[in-house]
Structures are given as C-alpha cells and as structure tokens.
Image 1: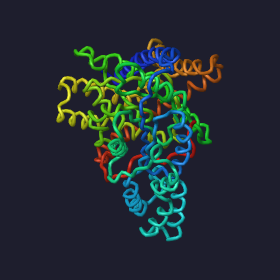
Image 2: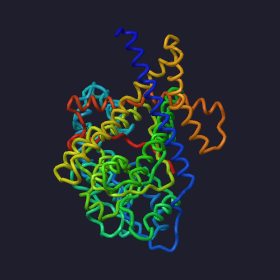
Image 3: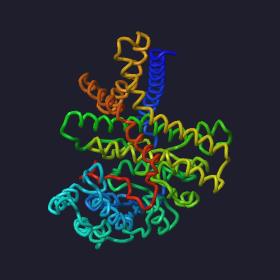
Image 4: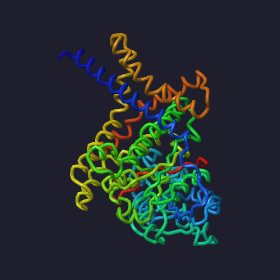
Length: 497
C-alpha cells in the first residue's frame, strides 16, 4: 500500500470513528437533557431526613477556606442533621519542604513549573533570586514560603468560635492524598448517616441539596450511593482571544462530557448494578463517581474499605469497588456548576492529573483481586472498559485533527469530505446548539458558530494532558508516590455560586 493510500485509510478511519462516536454521544446528550427536564426526584415532605456529614478535604487552600466556610454556614441551618468537617493535612508542611528544595534547584520559576505556588509566592521567590544574583538559598526560600500560613492555621482562627457539633476541623496526620483525608474524617464520625464529599470550591445550592435529600429519604431501602453532577463554568478567562476561546471551549467540552458520558454511565449503572449475569454486568459497565457531590451511606463506605488511597485521585477508582460489589448508585436529576480552569496551562494540567485515574486502574484491580471481591471475568470486563475510555481520551485530539484535515483537503474526495464534515458537525455544532437551546431557548447563529469553533479548538487540545501523563509514567514520574507534591494547581480566587 502506497503512502497516499495509507494516509487515505487513516483519514477514513478517523472520520468514521469521529462520526460514529459523536452520533452516539449526541443521542445520549438528548436523553440526558430529557431526563433533567423530567426532574424525577422532586423534594418530598413527611419523611425523616437522615444525618449527613459533609467532608471537605483541603490542601494549600489558605485563600479559599473562608469563602467555603461562609457558604456552608448559610446552608447548614436549612438542613437539620447536616454537619461539616473540614480536613486539613500534615502533608502540606511536608510539601512545603519539598517545594523549597525544588525552587532552589530549578533554573526557571514559572506558574507552569510550580502550579502548587500562588502568584505572590512565585513573584517573591523570583525577586529574591534576582537580589541573590541568580542563586536562591534554601533558607531564603523557606522564609518566603513560610510567610503564607498553613491551611490548618487559617482554619484554626476561622473556627475558633464555631459549634463543633455542626462545624469542626481535623488535621490528617499522614502523607496520603484526598482519599486518606476523607477516610480519616469518616472514621471519626458517628455511624448511621451519609458522608458527602465536596471540594473546597463546591457550592451546592439549597434546591440541589433538597433534591438530594429527597433521594436519601425515600421510603424503604436507603440508597447506598447518591451522586450529584456538575457543569463547568469559566468565571474569568485570559485576555488574548485564542486563550479565551480555548478556555471557554474546554469548559464547554467538559460539560458536554458530563451530559454525554458521565451521566449516561451513572444512569446505566443505576439500572443494572447488582443484577446477575454477564449481560447485566456489561450493561452496568464501570461508573465514574465524581468527588464533588458524592454521598456514601456510612455502612456502605465501611464495607468498601473507604476510598482507594493508593491512587492519585480518589473518586474515579472508587467506581471499580462499586462495580465489583454491585453496589447501587443513584444520580440526582439536576446539575450544579463548578469553576473551570482559567488558562490553557491549567486546562492541560487538570487533564494531565485526571488521566492518572486511567493509569491507576491496573493497581486498583490488582488490589481488588487480592481482596477477592467478585469474579475474575468481571475484573477483566472492567479492565477492558477502562482501557477503551482511556484510549478514547488519548485519541480524541489526534482523530479530530485528522478529520479536520480530511474535511478541508480538496484531494480527500467527496465521500470522505462529507463523512469528515458530518463527524465534525456532530462533535461541535450539534452539542453546542443542543446545550444552548436547553439553557436559553432560541440560539443566535453567531453564538452557535462561536461555541462550535470553541468546541473544535478544545477537541484539538483535549489529548495533550493525557499524553503528558503517559509520558510522565513512561519516565517513572507517575505522581502516585506519597512523597511527591500533589499534582494540583492553586485554586483561583472566588468560586461559582
């Protein structure tokens, strides 16, 4: 086969794959939007409300715990039996020492290279290096980083006068990540209710929580797991037009993924979880819980052994344990919003971190095999599903680029160009118009065109972070080590209400 024929075959493969995958995704998007409009879980009265213990793990969140605390202080009085536990971690002090050594040995101090540091810390470190003639002493770096109080110190001041029965603060003494903080807090709470895990920038409204309580207080068997879902919103974006387009497009693409993949995965699992037979297990698939707005019944989380602590992230790997044990989960038929990254580098860093879940699936499944829940065939099935989803994410950007070239190149041939154009329309125009119509009603042509182009740009960028995560793993730098700084960025100021 000649080079031209090979290139044409690759283009056909990309165009067909993009068309088929996005046709299925748009169908799922239509079903999700219809499900949200039905609002099946209307708040109900007359049932006893269960206790809900909200757990918010924090790491390097000195600037943001105050806003989070103010939000929950308004929410808690509306829901009797709800309490809040904010969990800081001793890991923050250990990471400060690691960062001190890293900034002293680095030749460049940038936001991309040190996302764990605030802009103020980076500016002070850079100025100190210039004053020192280009060589930053460890003592100087340590003094600059020590100017920022630890999160636990800020919390200690904020919670000095709070009622500990409603709002309390714990400090996890180990080096584990978010899952370890949640598990530590869970072991300290009285049994008999639900544990709700949120991030520091989560802002669940009273209406969403009322819908959630309606599910928690259903007559009969209380649900084991309840999941809230969120769309991603950019509160501020960079000034250059290209940056704004990529950031907005990436947020819209992540929201589209929630509506086209995350919610359908959760609903399909809800309908088939725990049923016997390979077909039921295949239909149930592999749920992907989200760590902002997931409610675990306390006895169920104890049976699972807590959230997985050997992985970079905690929420997505927990889906393996749910699936292997057939633990049912229910989705709230409403969505909230969460803040999206504001710069292209933050988008890439976020995807780089999130893709670690797919790299961690083998470790989670090996641990499951040692604990012997379920059957080996079920574990192989979940491995295949995880591998497919990871491969689809890695291929999203390249397939979109090849399809775009095939659609634009006159030498592609009419059939290939039509197929490629159809795939791009299904990937960008259709979800943009459907999502905008659901929110605003009629969509203006210029808005639809802008949103579609931003989605296209986001698809071209989408695989960059995952491929960097693979490159990290290939070099032995997969950030699962408890000694490595947590691969998270510094949260922006403010949050989406």
